[in-house]
Length: 445
Image 1 (cartoon, rainbow, N blue to C red):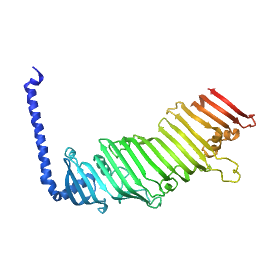
Image 2: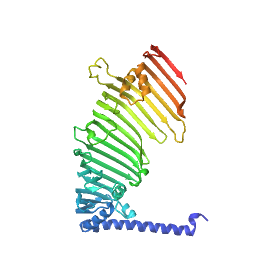
Image 3: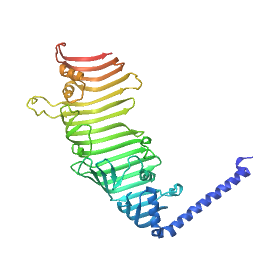
Image 4: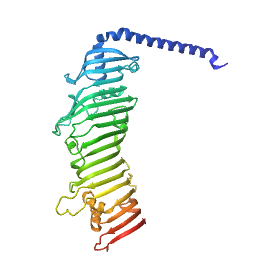
């Protein structure tokens, strides 16, 4: 007997059809009830809606007025005079208008779910006190993750938009003046465990041009940083790098400098993984270590990147070029600016755990030895390489450079070196007669 002709199969099919029609008509009746009974009288349910929102975000919420309409088949609510109170019960955030489109998934989740939440032109105050505690609109943020209810609720909504906001950042710990960002637009799209966001903001013109920040991450629980992975992108067409030190810490001293940057950062399991940046900088003064002189750059450009892992690191550059300013001191007046023509390079260094041998590999499209020797005074090099560059004062160009080495047991176990050199010159020392005008190739191991 065919399966579809079996009496039991037919009975199951008829039951499934009946359930479908029951659900269909139940859904239609629910929409009709919302359209003709609930939404026209939405003001009567304002207190209950405020209570549900309060329970969802874990903070007390009051609503001055609610107007309802429809966005397709989804209820569309416009909330006016919305006030969110802090833990102490005092008003912390106030919004003139909040637009929300309800999602039917609220029924399945037994909680408030929104297809869209939009807030227009709010003013948000962020603050860090002298003890390092952070506050959002006067509400203390628990960095231990105890106050993650609001964040988890935000990640559960389908889309959130903030338009035309003003953000004020006050850092009492740094004793810095307030930083005001205007025309702040923020969007967040959540699809399951995937979360994409975009943010644009206008700092004061003297600080930077428009900031464009975007991100694409996967994660679920804000209290578990190790569960998050993704990428972030930032673009700033102009920034005064030195002035931003008022609010940010740099790993190096940067008395002055300006320029543009585009950067991509990768994160895995809650940790920084890799960074790539396109840089175009002008009039930069930087000091790479306290015991080194300041390097005065007229310009620096190119793409640089790096990747860090438990087993090692890699650093690379593409079309990296720089030009220093003319020396200002009387003693160095005859010196020329240091110029590095666009070059590509890649360094890969692996240091496995368990005492295994360390391996390294370095390639470069070309290197101007004279420029490298001149830059040595500004770079954090070991005493040996620095002294060798000073003693031999190399000049000329090497290209197609490939170097690989293996080090273990406290000594160099093996190496290989391949390169081409042109017009190579080395200064004479007590143990070396010197050389000049050398060209050729080198293959050593």
